[in-house]
Image (cartoon, rainbow, N blue to C red):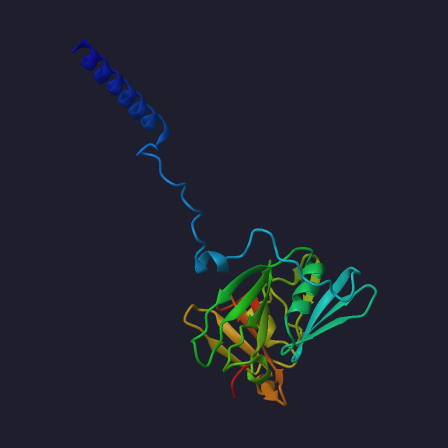
Amino acid sequence: MTLILGIVAAVLAVAVVAVVGFALTRPSDSAQPAPSAPSVSTDDASAPASTPSSTPSPTTTAAATGVAFSATGFTLTSASGQPFTYRWADEPTAAVAALTAAFGAPPTQRTQAGNGSTLPDYTVYAWNGFSLFEMVPTATLTRADFSQPAYALFTANEVGEVPITAEFGLKIGMSAAEVRALTPAPASETPRPSGSIRFAFDPQRSSFKNGTPSYSVFADTDGADGPVGTILYFYAPQ
């Protein structure tokens, strides 16, 4: 009998050791796999990065002396080196790089939504006082066959100490009376629901011939008497 009890005790001791060892080596029930990093949504991906993307160097690194607009685009001049001319139908990369160098800072970027059919989305490159709108081409709407592949506006006469010059003597800050007194005078003025006025200059020159867009000039006042707060270059349908 004593022998049997000894054997049973030995077996129990071995079982206890095995159970304790298993308990010490198995994962805890509360331990979970480390969560994976959250996936980036498409909205997050479209937000501008905190560090501006690199852009090609412009054709000249000399100090910019001005940006002058015309019906077909704008020209960036410098104290030395060749002027940089941008046409509305040109690809925007070089223009963004040249303006970034001229203004001394990269632009912010956002998307301005179109209507999904006849009006495309636009990528807006915005500096303080100057915005360049570049269409986002689609399979059915390309830069080569759209009458307004890009357009621009400015709200300051200087951006980063670089003078911005419109045609017809237009300047930011003019009163409505001063705009009416320009030569040639504006072709039309349209009161707007906000109480402001939109002046149009040479609207008949808006055209799209042989793939080359030509734009008219518009000045929006900040009230019935002014001052002019925004000057725009865009295609005006005839």
